[in-house]
Length: 194
Image 1: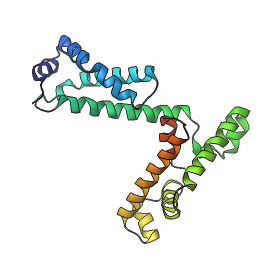
Image 2: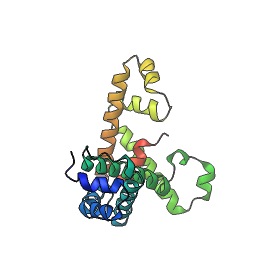
Image 3: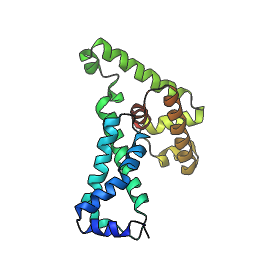
């Protein structure tokens, strides 16, 4: 049973003072947790606020008999990942349009330099993969094949495809981190379906 059982029961009943006490108890911890994923303090503050808004909005689902700490950090994790995905999609050019002539004609010189750098970085990340892993990644991300289709095409198990894709994404993440491009862009590049 959670050590804050009484506090949680009061929050479930809509007690705003209990909710403020909960914020005082967990607010800083959630902010520090979020800051491990986003380096911008304003974003971390916004996400922390959104976590507590979500907790308040779904307070009737709180189960005081279960660990609230685990619950709040799970909510924080999901809201943070959603934020990273949204920010990456909004801030960076869709890599699928890198060869789009209409986009290229309207882009400024700086945009074209960034475009070439992103494409080069993405291609280098793929090139550093072992040949079989690179082939599986390319079939998945560039040709849009499912894991089952890849397994059938290469005469390997679906589990092997899954393991190779996981390893490819981990390896690419390390490559992007070493390239110091930032978590948001790394996430976007790794999960882009080009």
